Length: 97
Image 1 (cartoon, one colour):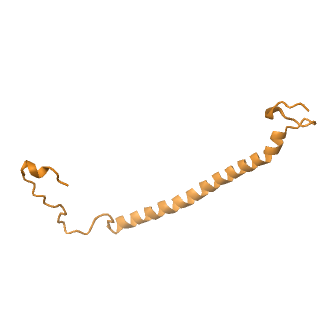
Image 2 (cartoon, helix red, strand yellow; image 1 turned 120 degrees about the horizontal axis):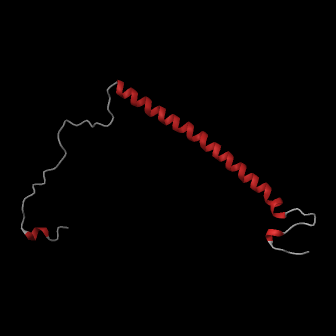
C-alpha cells in the first residue's frame, strides 16, 4: 500500500475515503443550514409583522383619539433649579469635592 497523504488516499477499488465518509455529514450540515435559514425567515416575518401591525394600529388609534403617550402630565412649571451662580472668592473653587 502506497501512502500519498490525506488528499490522495484511495481504496483499492478507486473510491475516495474522504469524500465517502464526510459526504453524509456535509449533506446533513447543508440541510441543517437550509432548514435554519428558512426557519429564521419565517420567525422574523411573523414576529416583525405582529410588532409592526400592533405599533401601527396603536399609532393610528392614538391619532384618531388625539392621545399622546410621550407628553408628561406637568402643569407647565419647570424642573430647572436656580443655581444662584455669582462670583465667589478664588479659594472656594479649590477642592470642591
